[in-house]
Amino acid sequence: MAASEDLESLPGVGPATADKLVDAGFDSYQGLAVASPGELSNTADIGENTAADIVNAARDAADVGGFETGATVLERREQIGKLTWTVEEVDDLLGGGVETQSITEVYGEFGAGKSQVTHQLAVNVQLPEEYGGLEGSAIFVDSEDTFRPERIAQMVRGLSEDAIAAAMDAREIEGGPGSEEAMEALIEAMLDNIHVAKAFNSNHQILLAQKAQEIAGEHEGSEWPVRLVCVDSLTAHFRAEYVGRGELASRQQKLNKHLHDIARIGSLYNTAIVVTNQVASNPDSYFGDPTQPIGGNILGHKSTFRLYLRKSKGTKRIVRMVDAPNLPDGEAVMRVEEEGLMAE
Ligand SMILES: Nc1ncnc2c1ncn2[C@@H]1O[C@H](COP(=O)(O)OP(=O)(O)OP(=O)(O)O)[C@@H](O)[C@H]1O
Ligand SMILES: [Mg+2]
Image 1 (cartoon, rainbow, N blue to C red):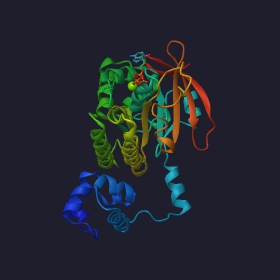
Image 2 (spheres, protein in one colour; image 1 turned 60 degrees about the horizontal axis):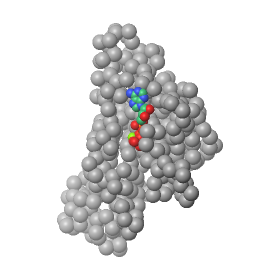
Image 3 (cartoon, rainbow, N blue to C red; image 1 turned 135 degrees about the vertical axis):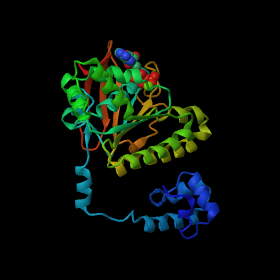
């Protein structure tokens, strides 16, 4: 992360502008280089022309924004990892699992299981690749106070015996799946690899996303690189704070910037991004589609994979792929049990 002094070496940026930029979260050349002049002008309160100059200068300084060869694109795409949901049918729906370098939006009504999914993925991401993991750690941005370490513990215990044994081996925990002591050590180690932060309001949530990028940077190349960022819920604070019709545009603008920040972590650090979003459940509604997120499809095309979760009988849940590049739409069935997500 660059301090405001570093930004002052950009033409047209004096100390006051540099401070404004840093306050608005633009604290690196790279961040500035990928910002749009309009976004910069609005969030940092500087003129549109100056903003355009700053973005261009930052592009030169950061050496980004140019073309790259198809080979480079292919090389990066070859790094894409696939993270298991534990449920084979859902993994198939996703083309192998939740992808890194993309945003996956999980939406559905209350109790549909969105938070269960984020917990399960925070466990699974730590597994060896042969068990569908990415051998990495997780960041959990919690805006609804839903993160429960006890739930993580249940899900670790609910993993297959082979996966537990392999996860223990990877950490040199001795005793095997049969040993309660080893099991507790594994749970503790897995909890240590989940970086949780509560977001108290939307501005705080935006700051946490920037902090998440720092954490991902610090862990790059370490034994447990960050391979998953969950934001549960992405939208709750924004909805609560921007209620009036007149505020829709500013809500959208803030949310866009936030998504932009999160998406950047995904591509910079080969991380899977999973965000949740609630929908209204009102089957009686004549107008309005109850399967649409409250406030419309506010995430639009920014979420690359969109999964709609729907309650069914008892513990059963239907997962529908709504739209995804290069994948057919379809449905899968899963159950939410004490042990975690399970196949039907
Ligand atoms: N320990 C557990 N054992 C079994 N099932 C559980 C357990 N904890 C939660 N569940 C199941 O998960 C459901 C809650 O799911 P979850 O909290 O993920 O919903 P959500 O989609 O995040 O809802 P919201 O929009 O309110 O955040 C419960 O209704 C229950 O069916
Ligand atoms: Mg939830």
